[in-house]
Length: 159
Image 1 (tube, rainbow, N blue to C red):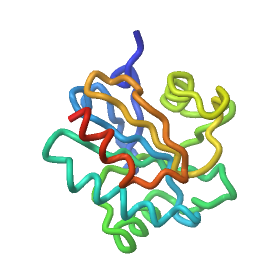
Image 2 (image 1 turned 135 degrees about the horizontal axis):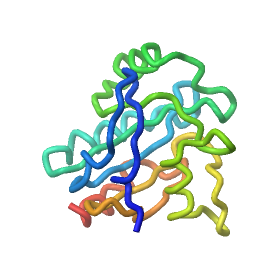
Image 3 (image 1 turned 90 degrees about the vertical axis):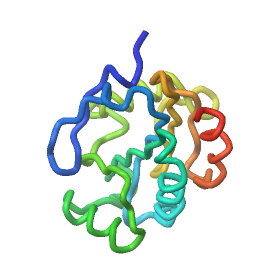
């Protein structure tokens, strides 16, 4: 059975990251954007990370420019924006596609494991969130409109 540990991604510094290193942690994987109406969710994501990181929780942000070209910057610009405007300290990855032929294999897998409304596999917009348990399984998919603080109770159940 496939788990998140079977995937490798690239950090925003261009370094490879084997997600097997995250085995044993509860993860919230989010496609992010700096110029979106949901961008203020960075605040809530950072608060979740700060609240639970010492208990084995991590947020992984995956910048994506597929929705309204709302993430036009390069890795340094994105990291700087997130740090300055929202105090983000959780890990940011390299920019990815979440839909289409060039979609990240990680996103293809998560979409299959937790389809959206009416079985839709496509990511509809920025700040779609996937909650991953300590065993590396997708537990739930959250819509962009689901605020990070509303996910806290689900995170606590897995910790």
